[in-house]
Image (tube, rainbow, N blue to C red; front, side, top):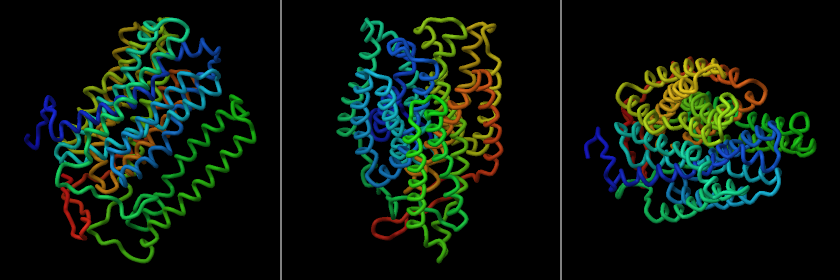
Amino acid sequence: MSDTKLNLFSFSGRIRTLHLTWFAFFLSFMVWFNHAPLMASIQQSFGLSAQEVKALLIINVALTIPARIVVGMLVDKYGPRLIFSGLLFISSIICFFFALADSYQMLLATRFALGFVGAGFVIGIRMIGEWFPAKQVGVAEGIYGGWGNFGSAASAMILPSLALWYGGDDGWRYAIATTGAIALAYSFVYFRLARNTPRGSTYFKPKKTGAMEVTSRGDFFFYLLMNIPMYAALAVLTWKLGPDNLGILGAGFADGIYLGLLALYAYQTSQVWRINRHVFTERVPELHRYRFKQVAILDLAYFVTFGSELAVVSMLPLFFKETFDLSIVQAGLLASGFAFMNLVARPGGGLFSDRFGRRKTLSLLIAGLAVGYFILGQVDSGWPVALAVIATMACSFFVQAGEGAVFAMVPLVKRRMTGQVAGMAGAYGNVGAVTFLTVFSFVSPQAFFLVIAGAALVALVAVQFLDEPKGQTAEIMPDGTVQMIDVS
């Protein structure tokens, strides 16, 4: 195989790893969003109010914020093969409990726990980064992310019909349990067939575990600052579910969560200090330095790309159903168009990034995303349904291609910390989802789309400060020697 082309019809070597891993991610996304296209049935079964439905949509992405940080550390330390297999196994069990829920409280608890499966994305980023060189990593990560992300569209397209095929009031339960059973079986397949690195390659691990390494004093404080929005998003979610809003959480329980978040941030700060205190007493050699602003800008870019995708995928079936008076199946099929573009858009964003430059590509795609959401903000019942679907798919192209462009660059920041960089960027995607879904709970769908467009313009400005990866980066071998890795 050449350095510039991928033979996707192969099932050997790195292509085999790519296919094994994108399908693992596909199943994790299918399980994560198996409730969205069936929400109307769930709402009817439990007699839920509109606000209770929105709470379920929001809470589905909450745990993924800390989970992606933790899983990023675990994958860097233990390798993607073990962590991805374990994640699929555990999430399948939680999925079964959601399907068996007999109260709204159990729906909330299990849906919150299922946010854990959303961390699967981080694992594959490290796996693909290990198997593909810099000239191919963008398109390979795009294929992984795009085809895997299609799991949410597959849920929207398949699960309503599957629930009808099962029949009865519990059809939605059997449909959801089916996704859990498939994930359970594949957890064993992935563990058996996947490998962390090509034969003879070294799997570089962080020197210390507990926080991301930084290489300057300024980056130390920048890192602490960038951690705050992740805790703030969880605090907003607690407030939304608390006594002043939905009343799902009691005042004492909500206050306990606030205190817990403060304590957790303090603990994380102590870990950041433990890992990085040496930057205040000694200068890190230039060979091993990297700029944390690269991570921060990619975080913001993923906030508006993946964050908006998660939010829109969650609300779009109901939006189409209510705006155009469609059936559940019709609305699910039409809404799947947003995620359907993942099949080509995300690989396309990675490919463009590989060939035409990381910053230029990301800038163009985020600009297109802003325009796309502005157009969606104009959609109402007066629009032809076909035109609304076309606008949705056009917008989604820029959203998912932008995601591909972000993760075309993530593996090039610092190899041994790829899981942690991916974890933080991925967590910011969920911060975006919580932010946008919280906004959605207060405003009309049209205003919701316009808010995302405004956030995209802010991210566009930030991307202009991104440094284009050039030359090589250094990693230390287990025997102490230095290995240079191409990043351009």
